[in-house]
Length: 348
Ligand code: ADP
Ligand code: ILO
Image (cartoon, rainbow, N blue to C red; front, side, top):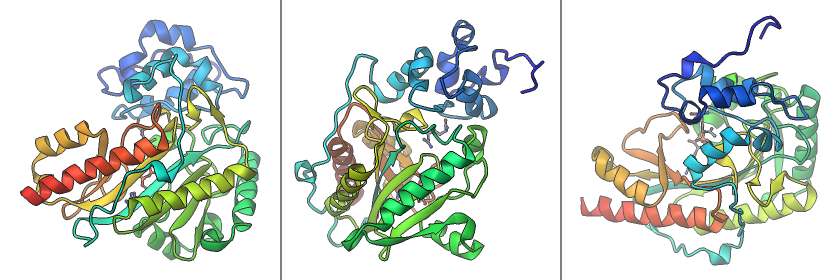
């Protein structure tokens, strides 16, 4: 923004269905427009993605942990709307896989193609990707990749920096659902694509069942995935990796919001547990499909991630709630919902 340009209430969000548009009225805009965090993250940074993309569902991003305090009059409402979590609530965590009740739902592999569980993490006292500097981003890459390279056993793997990867290799990894693509227009407007592809990369073990994305939307996305529907095995591997990483790196966490993430939808557990599942019959019955997913707090995505379409009746089904529920509950939501979906698909 040129210095002389005035920061005014954004007209583009009028009529938008985003949570930003729902809650940022003119009075609130005036209250927040000159506020900044110690890292210099301001309201313009926070809302730019939703302003540039009025078709956003949410429309805001944070720049650091402090953003959630400084812009609380806006963020708290968005958080309440998305997670049903209010400003006096406390987050809780449970990474004990023994607390999960999840016998294999589909041992004949008729419905579930693959299972993936990821969590986001960001390092304490380093700005989030929206305003991180190039040096800080490179430092995150160094800290995380060196830590991961010390892992042994089934988590042992290699680090592949993106700026050193051929276009063919990255395309193949993206197509096979292992690697992230360059951020879309939502991430672009949030500042998350700056200096692409420097400082970004992927660590994975030989089997590609344990993967860590470095410096995508969050500084770390820790991922456990495998073919088929053994949800418990995927969760166990993930919790092992999280515990190891947490013993070596201090992540941004507080008792109210849990793990701090750049998008408020990822706060709390920062967990998305998903299956790619074949539901060709239910997929043709929009209302009924949505009724079941709503009952179990699930989200439906296409098979190439967020904002993509389903192909051949295959859907990405994942937990929607992440804050105010434990990690075990997130996975249990997904498991219970998938069980109900398979039951109904069989009946049809
Ligand atoms: P995130 O999980 O970080 O929110 P996306 O929705 O963009 O991000 O998904 C990232 C990648 O993970 C995409 O390639 C998507 O197809 C893949 N993916 C998600 N769930 C599964 C799954 N259960 N099995 C295989 N790939 C998956
Ligand atoms: N900013 C986008 C995406 C929000 C949720 N998804 C994430 C965390 N990638 C929007 O507001 O639609």
